[in-house]
Length: 349
Ligand code: ADP
Ligand code: TRP
Image (tube, rainbow, N blue to C red; front, side, top):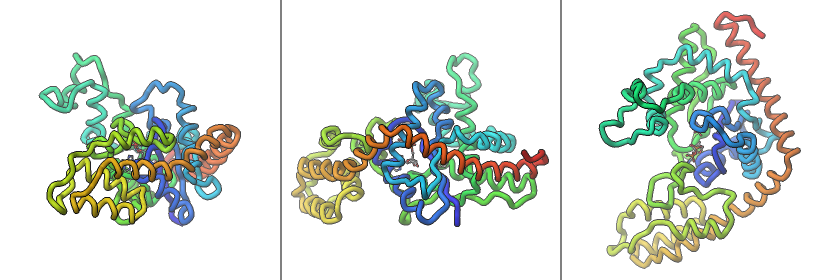
């Protein structure tokens, strides 16, 4: 059976983007693959080095994973920091990773800019220059720089072939590269190259309803699985729209296309077709469309929301799932790590 690995950082509640971009694939894959789904708490330190209550944040994602239907009897669900083997592999991968290639990744540059407090625009936007500028009182952590090696270690420690992730993750390219590099450095054919996996033939990008491209925690436009009916309605009714088309069959401007994409994701096909036809006939009433969309999102979230609340209240069960997951994940990880130690020339444990 092929192995699958994926994780989400515990930096807040899961939102519809996380669900349709990642978790939905987890649910489909757990029946057919040897799945490892984890909570990337070490990764959250790369941007949140002083977490308020990391155990609570981890518990939140664990409850939400389970409430969505990830089944601990089928998949191994674990907390990254419960598997110390990952760190040792991370160390070996870092020895063969170039700081140049790590600094050139777009996600590093974006987050480094934030840590350095420099804006994207203007002449002071040069990340490299600012990293070496002793006058800048802010610094970029080595942890952020090596985010992709830690992610590669997460994946290849279980020799995974498939990695279900949402929007295109350039870090996956790095993971493939580090797997190949390990093999060529030590002259072995040990790690398979992992590939991103999407349900259907392309990755889903859940849009934001504020007129922008993507729904995300940091974008401040997320609809969370835990949101109640009133909150969902408020968020959807606030969605950006316009005065409506004046010509039949007009191309949809981005904010409108986003509303329709969201409807395509959560509503019945007939509902989508109904409003699409109204749009094409220039008869669309966005108020009606949003009301319907809010209703459909609520219909989708309500049962998950209830299960999240049940799960979160059952600390004993959550602990049991985490303990069982850690045990299974460590068994798989330590097997790989022992072989890695031997390949490099160290004594196996
Ligand atoms: P966020 O951007 O809210 O911080 P993460 O970066 O933690 O979310 O993403 C966790 C997982 O959810 C990743 O697999 C990511 O690709 C997926 N994901 C996040 N937002 C979206 C979105 N809007 N559409 C599709 N997938 C998404
Ligand atoms: N980078 C992923 C995110 O932003 C989280 C993550 C860490 C991950 N390690 C991983 C995803 C390994 C897939 C596989 O959400």
